Image (tube, rainbow, N blue to C red; front, side, top):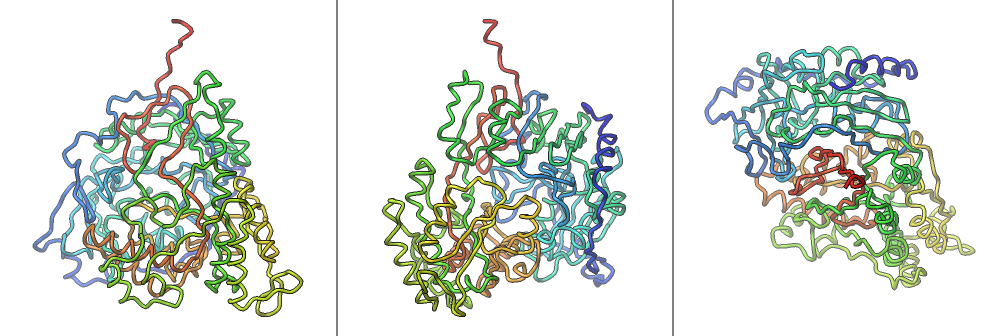
Length: 624
């Protein structure tokens, strides 16, 4: 590997600056298969069992016999540096525990058992595992066959014991969100050195057997020594890249292993083409952009619409390219989250009033260059988006659910987002908001809003940078016109992350990424259990029996039609609750990059597919 000889030395030097810190979480969890009866442990020997190299969930595999994926260029040259930015800080290369602040890009260090297709919903192809054994009619277990050639960085073989140790560590000491996601695992058994069997309990989602295949795998020897340490030495992996350099809060650099064991796998042909992948850290995104313009790093996904709309790359002799790459994924739901753990936001009328105070029309025209659409779905722009009145099938599902008072409106349709005349005053909507606040039992004294106990209403919006300051200041001005003592509070990245993990906030900006095959992961986004688990992703604090029930149905879906049906019902329930103030989005990814970066002519449907880009030095036109 280029520069590999100094990898461990460089990493060891960095650990002197950050003392390893052990997690205090050691949950007792029996994952041994010894507790299971022989009939369960031997069910892989019964009729109906198949072994295949492809694993699908409610879909068919299009590329089972392909030599490479259609969005890959198997002849892409190797070389070059992919340099990008990151904002904030890091003090750890361990992104699998809730302690510490992990560096960006650690996923490049690890292989997963299977690799997901970027063109198909929940279709998995071989990576660390070269086959799976399962019973299509019995989702209570699955066996992964470890590729006999799979190797960790140190040359040692990846075995079933490593896989078992990885999942035991994640389920007992790992990220709380991952523990919830994988909570349906009942036991793990090593059948032999290359076969590991997972058993699932009755509460497990139908897709959990496949979801297991998308998790990283670490070396057992490393797990036993330091899985729960905050450290600048990454856990031993088998991925295409290794760590070369980690300078806390400055930069992290990964280098490609030319001896990577999996380079000839179908999913990896034409993939991992850059010799080096580097992230440079900056205090905020504005500073990062200025650094990009001077060439300090050379590839950027642009999320600030002002920079995107106003940056004239032609003025720089076309050294910087701009491209909007379309994808078919649900548009990222982003906006202001109201913490339901705060009494103020438990009344839906208050939440509706808060939404009425956001003037999207003025914001889009004056601040966003008219580039965006108002989001009105958690699956916006996809086949999973709920629109208008529910279909007969959706209505039947809704009527069978234990809907609470806030969710009753889902029976009639999805709520319309407020529309203003775009004058920036937003008078009509603010009058509606005032009426809702009064109807909710709040009152006004000397122009200030007071809650039912007579206390003046005060709230803070926590942020970790100034990225959305213009949008937020306009919104806060409208809140003040409603008599709410609202303020913006900027925190450093570490403090912000701590407050978010502890749900210690009134409002924050949050985003909820969705794919085209939602399943068990919805539980830690919206599930009642996750609302009480610090560090989980239910930042809103939703606790709804109906939502819990539909997540279970979605997790157990047995066809694509069922997945779409239950996703639309989930969308209706979330929208009916009016739990957040949806912002804006679009179905393209805007990228800027310097000449030399290339990508396949046929991009994947659901991503820009950066793993499949490559670098080719531009021609020196001065020599022509």
